[in-house]
Length: 586
Image (cartoon, rainbow, N blue to C red; front, side):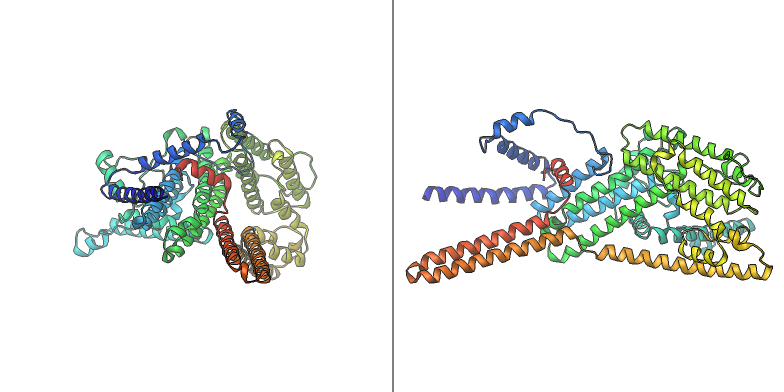
């Protein structure tokens, strides 16, 4: 027994010595992670080599058969790339540092947080659409100072340039306010990361390395503002500007869909991060996870709403052969019914055939991305059709029937028909033509998602505009504007309420687990009380035995609660956690 105790003490001293030596090696700049990883892999291999029961042999034989499962097409499986996988491994390294080296745990968390934002920023600037609309305009820090010191003379040309520059800044600020209203968290994070890069608070060594090795000759995304920093390059093989790949639409969405996977990896370690860090940093961890969830959600909404503009090109009324110009040139003021759709309908069908062919050529593109992209393209076409229909000056009932026929042919044609879209947006707009004035105002208030231009088109055409005098038409226009604004405010209020409900809504699975934990605790308490009562009945001679049972029951109670709490903290996406553990050896 004495020898066993001495061996245990020696092992504990050796373990403490190893921890101190690892920390000293880390402070000296030595790479300790390869050694930690090798030790972990060795321990796992030894654990696997030991047979724990009689079924291990059969299990090993069964597991030797390699089975490749077909990936799911519903979006339930994560989308991975080499870069996102390396990012997940880096997250695992940061967690290992936080576990092993407590003095630098918070610094490792900051590295994890900043690296994820750095990744999101570069995915945004390379794979986003119209990214320049999200950046706050920066003017030169030295221009105004040089002007005041007389560094240059102000000429008429300079005054014109200054006026034009001021107009561009005002226009950019106006566009950015729209972006902030639709995607507030995404806009804040992108500008925050850019400002940290500009002030060298984030990745200053990387900027020095690029300056030294590459002489600042890195490629930049097109239309990226000159004041926006870019330290990473997308592969040229992605062909993000090629019409053959439709501006790299597949690569753009694969890059976008890697973000939810990384968020799920970080979110799965929420409880672990709070346990490692002190209580004063728990709020920062929760705020960071809530922020990245909002950022990724807004980023996906932004991508799926704007990338279809790269797929569908309807042109403008000024372009002679564009689809929009053909719609404007259609005679809607007809007196007879027709059974044949307009020519622009078949142009739209051919456009969707090409979209389906290009997306199908990417065999690794998940089917749910393919499906959603086509759905968003259909929605974009609907919005453009309504906008074009709202421009017509005269339209009869027969003309409205022709619009319905065009929509029906589009809806039933291949490949559009296989996406099961309702086409309610155009259908409701066309049917509103037949509403009387009172019913039309009620419809406008209930359908504020249409533009004010679309609603004002009923002042020219439709049943509600029949036999109106000029003064009555002006009053009717004011009433349309008032009702539309009222419906708009109600819709925005409902959206804000839904967002608040989503934030404040409890996680039902966690609530059920907490209730289950409380039920188990009550059962264990009742068992302890029953044992205590039986011990009192047995008398004083069994007092010592009763005390041992009581302590055993209390320890069982403690272990049960501890195990349940750990289970609650580790309630995560099982597949993501498994992927995380495989990649980072956690």
